[in-house]
Length: 575
Ligand SMILES: [Zn+2]
Image (cartoon, helix red, strand yellow):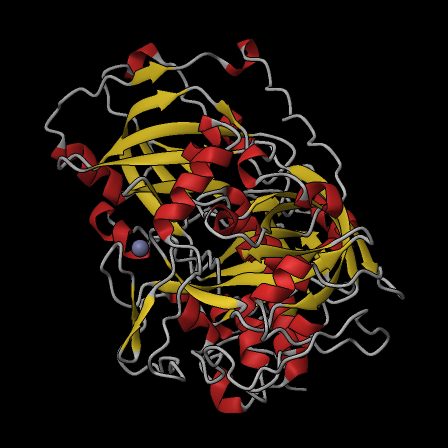
């Protein structure tokens, strides 16, 4: 049989057969390791050393997943070659494989033995360039100097805590980095305790890592895609060993073994309150753990933007500077990611209240990544249909006082998490707008209702002077997320020129309010300054989940070709 090298595969190569070894295989379960499987991921290598990422979709996972084992060689036919993902790339290359219901897998008679390790090292000193950059996974090599036992880390925005194990590595040249391994990987990481190699530095190759930022320091984060090899037989490990000049690296161990730790109790479920009850509470008396409420979104706050450019490091809003954005806190230019900051009014029939959802929470409400919605805008005067479509959706939220409530008479609630999604409602709970809110907001205009519903109340006013124009001619998607746009990229224009595109809540306030409302010290440690910081593995997950959705959206939305010319969706729209 003739096998095709991985390097020769092109989209629409339906009839080729490959002979490959599976170097890495992992499962991706979405926002929770115990959640439903979303896909199985693999890194394949052929006998010429070519590599390719491959994916088994969830619906084929039961059948095809068990047929594949790591470090085994297979003959595989009837697969789909598609464009590589634009985020979380494990190996370079323009294409990836997708297994389908037709895919044939058989164990190969001739084994492929090398190369054993597939990696592309990012030197320690280059890692800061990739803080919160999710375009690709990074592979790193270092000497272990410290291993902590896994610890339970609680989160405010999810019911269960996560395990995290901290490790320290050195590159033998005086540069150290911190590494955090999450979830079940945290318990799987172990160094064989061999007295014969006691004095030899333990070199570890980590693959599939991301670079994160916490408390003004970067660290390397390993989650489901992360794999490691202790004392790998690769030239770079030999070079590293030579650099140590025989120095011994005694590994410092700390922490309590996980078996002796008790899993922390989940945080107490906050009380269920009606909006009327919530409105009656003084912001300073509001429960520290927040509260639950079941509400239907009745209209949007059209006087505020639903997106903002968030600094990659501190997550605060960046200010426009010419055609760029600068973070006033970090003083860095054009290192930002667009995020949701979605205000709306919700009602439960007892009262109508303003609420605000940020980043990943807002994305769960809208159902699409913010960049996708920004790219879909055709008419700058209109609220995008994807945003308008949230009206009439009913949820049970866990909410806390939004920071602005501490300085203004008008209350607003920040949504910490979505506890239940009831979907679109045929009828909206009737309640006129809160009088305090009305007097504050003359410019409110009802949002465009979705086709099947209409808002209960349309306040007077107009949006003739709306906000900052949403950048519609925005960056190609991969460049937006790269966050280090080269010079030739079109930077979104600030339409009015004199408006500040800032989060309405100043950063200092945000910090102090967060302090008041924080659920635990650990929470802050994990989440940084904001509850939606991307330092959690869940953000990584959310983004990985969106990847597929995003490519689907791109396909159906069919934006002008020049806008997506340099981005790649994982599914080619071409027939
Ligand atoms: Zn910043």
